[in-house]
Length: 92
Image 1: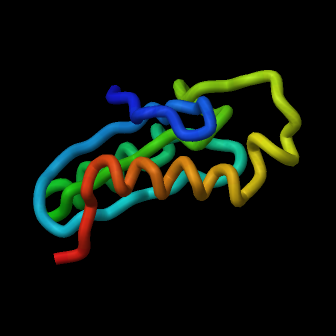
Image 2 (image 1 turned 45 degrees about the vertical axis):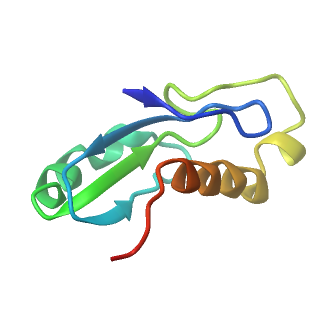
């Protein structure tokens, strides 16, 4: 398990396997990155697979803040975009 740099004070736990075209897999609500164990194994031969736990799920940071502010779709997206930028994931 790896951890991202914080965005809005939240660090995401994530797994990264394989090499090739970057693929980011996002779990459902509720869920966590373990939901994609079998899919990751299938993709990692031909893709750089990144699977984060969203804010408040799995091993990612959880803070006692307003869900509307800290855990909204927009807030989750900020963390995922931050992770994509941090890892310099670019389509090839």
